[in-house]
Amino acid sequence: MKTDILIIGSGCSGLYCALHLPAKMQITMITKSDLESSDSFLAQGGICMLKDEADYEDYFEDTMRAGHYENDRTSVEIMIRSSGQVIRDLLSYGVDFQREKDGRLAFTKEGAHSDKRILFHKDITGKEITQKLLEQVKKRPNIRLLEHTVMLDIISRENRCYGAAVRKANGMTGIIRASRTILATGGIGGLYRHSTNFRHLTGDGVAAALRHKVALYNMSYVQIHPTTLWTADQQERSFLISESVRGEGARLYDKQMRRFVNELLPRDELTAAIQAQMKKDDTAFVWEDLRPIPPKELQTHFPNIIAHCAAMGYDVAKECIPVVPAQHYFMGGIRTDGHSRTSMEQLYAVGETACNGVHGKNRLASNSLLESLVFAKRAAQDIASSWKRSGTEVWPDMSADLKRYENYEQLMEENKVLVRQEIKAAAAKDESKNRKEY
Image (cartoon, rainbow, N blue to C red):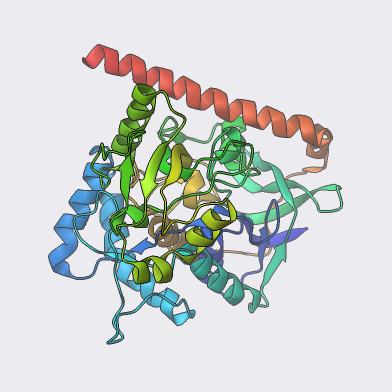
């Protein structure tokens, strides 16, 4: 199969990128599972937006402080300055953000934010945004969508990407040749026992980058979300209790039902405090109390969380729920520049699998959807501006490459090992560096 653009992944970054590529380009999007099984659909809290110029410095500082000032300042500026246009795009696609009684957009606040600057749709903002993007993509005749199609590896020669080897829905292996390839493969939650991510997201893009010596960045920077619903059986995906819940007034208690922490600390600091309290109390969880939130606000803003807790036997209007930290987001990944270009020619990376340094060591709440969209659009713009398809491209012979992918299960396990080892090696290097500094 040949295509102009190959996008690997169907989350918000891949979809938004496809929508901003020229209609004359033939675009193929593949996804490892079905089109809706991406972490973009799971995002609860919201998406940040610069409300006005008066908030710029505070928003910038909040992002930097949460990231321990290890953020790439240029990337942060690009993200914040681009937020208004991204929101206008989303509104034009029919995204239904919460509004005030007078019709203005309503904003909420989350941990480590100094002001309300987060737009939301109940507690399923990611689903609302990604569903509307998917609806738009399905209308485009130049975009082909292939579900249950797994990227086995990218295909490259002399540091230039020519597409990917894939396993099709029917189990057959093939190659999709592309003039440009965009990795939008999502996070790494499937590598962890406790994670809010879909289990099939195992860092496939990062594994491909490792095999082809594509530059990586901040590989040890893995974010743990402080509050997921604790259950006795933690084999399935952990259910997130949104940051917005604490932003609207929810409290955290120890086993004696005493408040022990400022709930609006940055995620890494709050996670550390919760873990310390669990160790002190010798418990598997702490308690979260949603009752301080006004009943009407609780019902309108968090219906999905209320319903899930009820299904698990908890009435959040009358009792506390047990919560525990779990792996949530990957700040590191494939190193990209301000246009989402990787160190390999004709290869781009966007979304959670990419790392342009915007999040630093710890992502500020509700910057993930925004960052993914901003830099996905910039990738599309860069491809469009540099497009010089002559129709006489010289494609290398790639038929022999298929033989190495015959054992699918073994390859997938090897990919997991590769990514785990790289994260551990990066963490060990960071720890050694910290010992020398202190």
